[in-house]
Length: 538
Image (cartoon, rainbow, N blue to C red):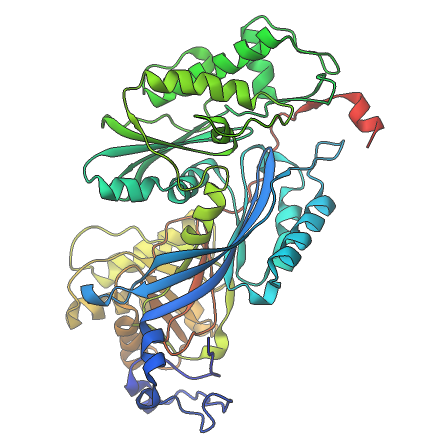
């Protein structure tokens, strides 16, 4: 991809303002000016088509792995849209599945993961510089480890500037639904609801999908590695949820002691019962309620199709038979029995254990539309911009004062002071692109950011619809000719997102955007109990 030097991208009349901007010379454009008339046939192809090399990294409760892909994005020109969507994915390399390494003090072994990470890059034939985008996903029990943030930072240092870190039960459910193929199935069966059930090592995530969109998500503390055993069959790890379930059954779990096969089966069946109480959306038993990690599913839509993903799904319906020293196979058997009673059509998943990481490589990287306004390209890339999401009414006309107040409240929700830092203001407005309406939006934005403009901070705007160039131009032409603008569109954001905006990509004149949907929380929940002899052996 060609990335020329610092040139403004936006309305031609910006060149008539008093704002100075450079036209640096570079190898692609020796005269310092990018001339659309010079485009070749191949260039015209690449204005509507973009290829990105991505990496998805999943560090979960029980397993960790990487996947490298090449994504082909295409502009929806036939719908008169500037939005780019993924139309093809080519798998470049899959790493082996690694049992997530933990130290004896119950923290993730960052050094071991780093070695695994480096080896996966070497095996793929790629370097961090070859990767355009991607995501590191710490999921399930892994986000509870005290050094989860350090692990994410370690990977980000080596993985390339567009790799991000995300976590959270609801987000993982969305990613798994994307990667399993549940969204594709729902598009092929309009009006019918698809349920993706992602059963991992420590948690199970549910996503109800319809018309290609995730309607609702939920998560419960049900997983195949809540109990783990050493090579001799003795218990060497007990997660808190396993202790709760065993206690409800009158089963005494002892570290360093074997567990009878019947007790394994009973614990697995109790976990499956709790999972299916949530799936069937019935009143929860006290045990299921104690394991629930989010709000339960509440939709009353009938489920017609079910897909399974996650590590435990590898054992379902004639899959893997390998034993990793846990209760995953017993849990899979119990889930298969209960699935038959649901009276739904079980659809094969595109990916099972790798569904989350596949979904991450698509979900977290977006590409802006090509109707964008950027006053100075040397402002990019920008990293870790907090998203301010003003809550607007559905009215077509938005008054400047109302938008200004909504933006101010967005700052207040994050305890931020306007003007102290650059933020990304995400505006989801779907009105008609009439000048009077667009000017009102531009006026409200400027009115809301007086200290930012005075401090010389760039105004960063992100629109879901194709208003980036228009509103950016109005702000510069009519309200604040001296301010730097990065106004992009075609990007779907929500509150609590953080984003990275990459350098301009030519000839398509778009920018890549990586969405970091959650920042790692400081979680200090109960830890797994570990056998003493594990400590002695390191």
